Image (cartoon, rainbow, N blue to C red; front, side, top):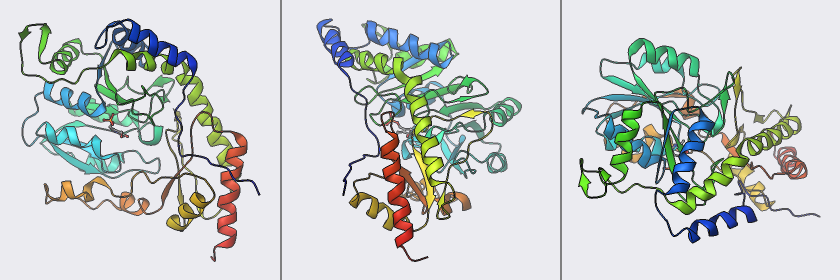
Length: 368
Ligand SMILES: Cc1ncc(COP(=O)(O)O)c(C=O)c1O
């Protein structure tokens, strides 16, 4: 009897990355130096924007952006509830209100529900390309243009995903990426960036991340220390060079999953919107008897996850702040059914075989 250990995700590490780390150490230049500048340039070029501003993580990058935009108390930003909690935090920190929206069958923002929640206080939209699947960019663009809203693409899980041949991060007024270790592009620690075309906002965010200054001893505004590091930029540049190939491998693994799980009535496979090239940060299926299946897979050496079990409009931090939180039927239904299966570029066909055999074996055994 073979026993395999297959984690939910695995970070890519090789000797060339380790060499780049040592070279960054030898430069004796540790913060916002040549590696950071080059990484910003390469990220902007890969995304297709004029500017990129690195920061210590996605949350700080968006926090700085929203401060630079000078939101007023009572301003509303429409955001899906079904996302990582950090998507919401900078909105609250900047003094605005997150207005929660449901998701569609691709787990991204439901445009009909979003339109129904626009009020005279709405100033912006924050679509999330959850699990690496682009939100409905065409319709978001139309709404933002018509209403004069800014919109921020949450690309934390979607590095390299595309719609109509163009990469996410280049559509919104602004976009933000995360480099947390499980992400499609990582820096072996925390990290994040904004991509944008507005040079004046980029400049303001650069100042805010570095104590409100351009010159070493002249502080034009009260800022923060939310800077980025040379060692991590060196890692990120090496990872970026592999990103498109790694995303193709993730998509290949998903094709194997689809083939092997097809026709299994207890498992609902993810839907792709036409024109989209998702990059499968997560491979999320909906399943019957989720807790029992996850436990069984764990016993068989297969890692799984639930992203996310408690929707944000039900989080205690939100119910303590707001009394008018909505009922979101799709979100509230799927959170009890979603299960993330192992996905990472090095996942092999025989590992996918193993996971799928175990899922089939579970349902053959379970009484239905
Ligand atoms: C969709 C989404 N948005 C935002 C974040 C926050 O990213 P960071 O941890 O870099 O602040 C994450 C990461 O967990 C995420 O998955």
